[in-house]
Amino acid sequence: MMSNPEVRRLASRAAANLVAVAAISAIFGLKAYINEHTPLAQKRDSGAPAFQLSKLP
Image 1 (cartoon, one colour):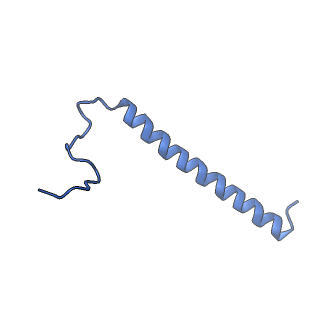
Image 2 (image 1 turned 60 degrees about the horizontal axis):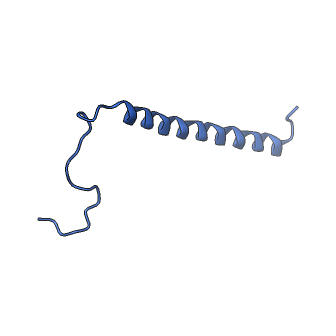
Image 3 (image 1 turned 120 degrees about the vertical axis):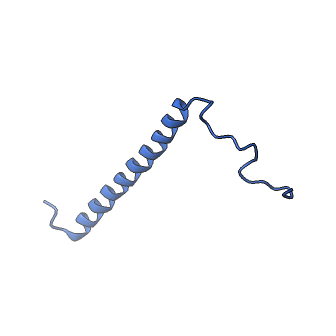
């Protein structure tokens, strides 16, 4: 069925892209799930923003 090298290459790229999208979706989904189910008391709050633009003390 897929004896043409161009068709095989295209199918391989499509499969790789599908796997990449599934992996990225799973990562962001897991992150959202963890953030949603983490109690507020356990969330880390250092009090300083992640990117501090002012001078350091």
